[in-house]
Image (cartoon, rainbow, N blue to C red; front, side, top):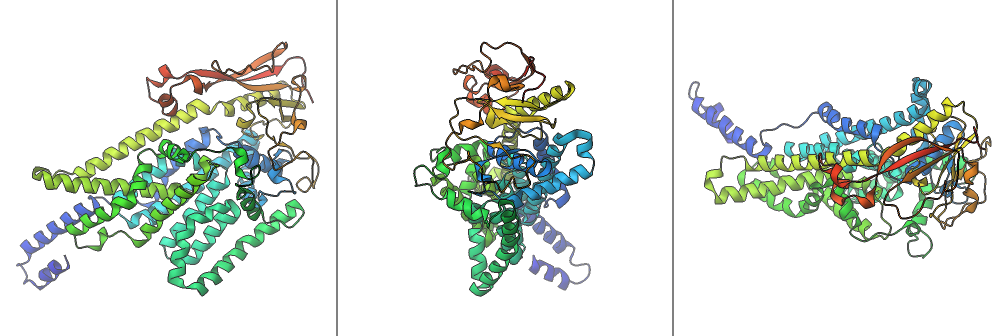
Amino acid sequence: LRQRRKQMEAAPPGKGGDTEDISKGKKGEFEEMEHGGWKNVEFITAFVVILLPRLISAAYNPIADCDEAFNYWEPLHFIMYGWGMQTWEYSPKYALRSYLYLHFHSAMGSAASMLGIEAEFGRRGVFYAIRFGLAIFSSVVDTLFATKVATSFSPMVQKGCILALAVSAGTFNAGASFLPQSFARDFATLSYVSWYSSQDFLSIIFMGISALVGWPFGVLVGTFIGLDILYRRGLVWTSANGAVALILVAAPLATVDSWYYGRTVIAPLNIAIYNSRVHEGEKGGTLYGTEPWWYFCLNLLLNFNLFFPAALLSGFVQPLSNLIKRSKSKTTYAKQPASGWGIMLAIYFWFGLFSSLPHKEERFMYVLYPLLCLGGSLGIEAVCTIINFVFKKIFCGLRKFPIKSVLVHAAWILFGSLSVMRNYAIIKNYSAPLSVYTAVSDYHTAKGGGAAKVCVGKEWYRFPSHFLLDDDSLRLSYLKSGFTGQLPQLYLEGDSNATRAMRTGFNDMNREEVSRYSKVSECSYIVDLILPSHKEKDAYLEGEVGWEKIASFPFLDKDASAALTRSFYVPGTSEKYTSWGEYVAFANTHTASAT
């Protein structure tokens, strides 16, 4: 093209018409081949596309992880209002969790209160305002990733990445979650954005925030960023700036946490040590269950369907795809950025490492999600490039047919459809707890309030938080069930040193603490799940009279439903192959309140 332009400039006036037309034609042909005739998506457009599903998730998605409720929403409620559940991780004896992390979110809650949301909608309004704030922040981060990182490859890859960030079930769940893994995901993503923008110090800072304030294991996703910076900048620069970043992040973290716990504490170090004890038999993360090696394969297939295998294939098909592109064009656009290999290696490293560990949870993959979206988009584009090349070599008549574009769009439509079906299924099947506890609170307020216990048995792990028990007099309590592990207990109310108190009844072995349980007669309300297929008999109200059902919402009966139709909502079909139970709340009509 440069040679053509020189010829045009050198041609006498009036003699360059044909050359100009040819030059434009060749340029258009190259652009069609390399860019697919598309342009990169601008920031505001990408932001709107990513934000809308996140807001839906914030408004309707259930809290799927009991850690989110009891380890984060409940301590946050205590910080803001003076009561809430305390887990053993927040005992000063163990000090595994950071209060600084909670204060990032209490700032959003305080802002919501100042704007009048709490006065208008109560604490549940603050709850949803925080979720909306998380959704907006994660959307900004992912949009930066899509417009700063994904654009390094091609407009087609960028659009695929935006689609995955917007609608995949993984990002739909993680984007508005109040979990350190989501926090770590956001700041690790900012680290990648800074790295791609040649802002190495900012990249180090963001990765430090991700690991120290969020989740210490999240630093591993930045391994290849660190190696690249070390190679380019040298040991002295990297060490000096790493030390500065460590001080800037660790100093306020240690100060805040040490004040809350009443002793010198570095919470991320404590949790890293605890979770590394996987071979000590009765200690470490394995106390809370182990999963087979293929757990994350199945989980990521559900959450990313086509994009997950495409991401795994990407590192293998990209070299061939790039070779095909370079054979078609001498431009440098078709060459994959060297940092693209950093992303692919990070995906393989992270997935392989956590698949090898015995204790697995879905949230352990959150940090990887943006990279997985980009890797999946790269993989789909590369596979379609190869298919396009092969078919046009074999069938000459197809040379003008846009095979690649058709295949890519077909893959996107299938991926988007499966993702929306998955997201809707999660909301439809499992969101009842959010509605039930809200109904209990409204009922209690209408009856005049008063100190009361809201009791749960086997359904304790689906409790969303005291934010939804909007009446100040309601407190959660437990009934004995088949669960034999350790349950949280209420923080000491009215005690300015509640976070420093060395209380009995906490252990790091997940041993049952019988002091947590109440009797049925002490409960003002009982929340439970009644499933037709449940073999274990629920005996909380057996032989009891004076209990009134005050709320009931449908909840999926997993054991009596087909795996496919419970995992993905298929209009007109899921209703035939899924069964439902009742998520119910009962009120004790004998007492106006039980203390």
